[in-house]
Length: 205
Image (cartoon, rainbow, N blue to C red; front, side, top):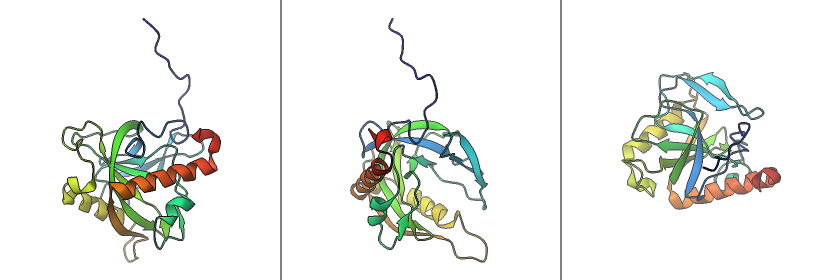
């Protein structure tokens, strides 16, 4: 029996993982937080380890798995696709993944099929949220566009991202400008891949 190749050290989730098997349609999603998390976790950009960003301010939690697509960056090309954005947030491209079976842990990698997204501004910066379904999911795995999932699921995402940074007595810094389907989502993913390659050309090879 031939030995199974292995990597001696853990790759950085942002730079060391591949974007996925068939981008922009099927991508890898590195999951940072789940619907069960009352704390927002995110990958430390320098070390690649998970860190606590902040406790969730309100009682709402993300309605889906939430993370990012490796080897993507929201910079000039992503901002150009977002009317009214003065720039992009400089982070990997965020992704929300629907799963019929509960997944209650983060710090994992999954295959996700892109079906749409939310055009969001955060303090005027482009901060798109790509929406995807878990590949081979028994309930959502056949979906190819956001129109094929129940509107209620999209409404929950809209509510969460419209309020998750809200402080009582202040206007929310986040604004959802549009909900879009696969074709626009594919352009956003491709723009984020190109933005990444322009800043990290060696890693993108």
